[in-house]
Image 1: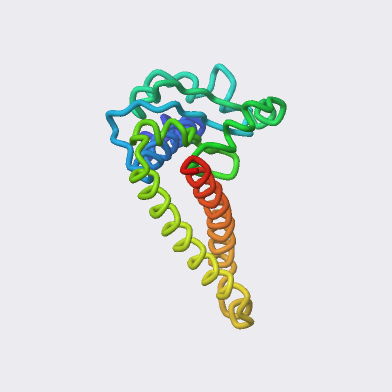
Image 2 (image 1 turned 90 degrees about the horizontal axis):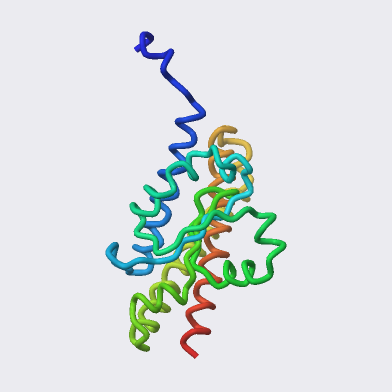
Length: 193
């Protein structure tokens, strides 16, 4: 094991983890929205990590591979600064399904593209709305359970700091996921009308 330690490059490993996380998040959006892998969708990768946007980053370096792996008709990397300045981009992201990789790295797909690929029939929209609503209710219940657990007086005394930190991060992720699901439910409701 030690003889190969000189070949270890944690920066490259971290970059490749980001690439793999983008692929997993993109596939997860497809799965969550019942879009087959053979259908092409536009993807937007949002980040506030400058190292992921520059021309030397692994994301940019492996862009063609990422595009092929996720079956993207189009793929763009968007900085948080760029999305805040561009009103059209902000509106596009607000009307997109999102998958959280980390608080500073997200994958977006416009809901209109998802529904167009699925079908424009009312049945698909109703099915999608029911599915998203059930998932939203499940996440809400999970979030409430975790909040109750954390707010319990004995929790602060008995639970080790390491577990408290894990629960805190899980709480943040669940809150972000709930917010994203709520947005997706509203988008599908608006498209249905």
